[in-house]
Image 1 (spheres, helix red, strand yellow):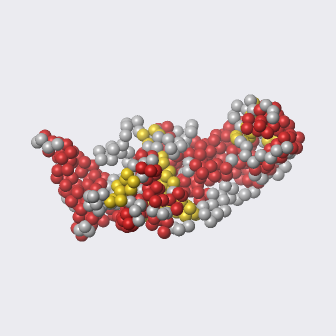
Image 2 (cartoon, rainbow, N blue to C red):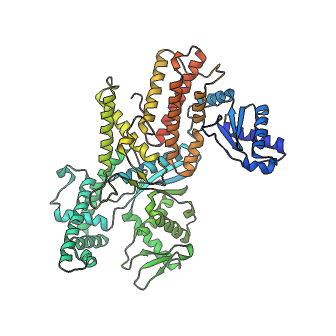
Length: 592
């Protein structure tokens, strides 16, 4: 039974009977917690039809629904808001329908396809805290779209070329002494990142020395020997110098191995990888085609530009005077290549920080000017940066919060807290370690995903790991608690059932209402590209169940029908929590 749809139909009938007019659009929302009811009809817009005051309109519709719908048990009107109390018989019917579904909340394949890009790192440093939010967001959006029936293609573009890569290469060439991940004991991405920091340290020292000799700051930055070497290596790479290409390939290989290990622990995956070192070539071809067609123009120095002033933006360079490409060039090539590779996709979702909002406005406009209609279907999932109590992260100075280190710290803290609680004595060492991994990474993911993606956020590791409050571990603990109840019921031969239940406790109604919201929340989260809606839904469901658990001792119930119902009710709650959390990439424990 689709309660929301049925209720909407009954409200339309009420309006037609009472006021002799049909309505298609009206506002039906969850009832404010201060008032009795589950659904609230906003009556103010209906007064033009009813020719009555908002309160009178609400009372008229409420009385009609109680008398004729068979759904509404009673109602109250507060300043033009009609709060509806659904009958227990209907809630039981709603729950019975959900209980009968083996895959509640998982839609059948729709045949529709979408692409989600996330991660998209540079190959000159390891992944950091910002990458964690990016990966968790992109992965979760992909999983949400899969849950509503889409075929989803998860991809990333690896920024594997450019001056930033050559900086690490130059520093390794000068100071590496042949160091490798094997000889250093470092993950490959950390080793390369070490030389990126080394470059910056030496570059600053050389600039300072040149400035002390009277060179201007701007000139010193160009003349610093280590910078000249990096620029030379970039030119050699563009010219396909074999020695430079070999070092580039070797160091990138170290980074990819390091990234793969980090992604595995994060729990994210990709269907296809794209590399800037290849997509920029297609981008250059498209830019030159745009020049021929008059979409772009060349300046006297040979550089290619697009004029977007008519679109409210400015002019943007697409090829430098020496013919080399910019980020925009490769993004043009990447977008086109992806639509060629996956022609059925309805659009691309780019998970990239909000500092790139202007970049994507320009990109989508350029693709449209090149004649690609699908440019209108591209979406920038813009998210806010993650702040720390210590201030802004800086990769060049080596002050970032390393993703591997943070994940390890979270797991270690989870292990410490779990042992302190003393509820894992019967678990093996392997099971304890797996539980700590589950809780630590669950805490991290939930904390980074519970905030609206558009908002900037402060990450607080100590708050995120707490068992009480708006946290992942609180939800995981609730799931483990329900699993314990289900094991006890099984040992007592109490099978879950919904037969012969006639009435509900208020706490039971609240939980069923939350469970019934799940499919709507999925659709809303996909529409808004917001895993935060799922994270907060999971928290609210866990909170409502805990209130039920505190109010009603399950195994003290003497009525066999009610006892079986509460076991069924608990089973569906646990299943829904597990599904919601899985969309966030979070596992939930059987014991905790």
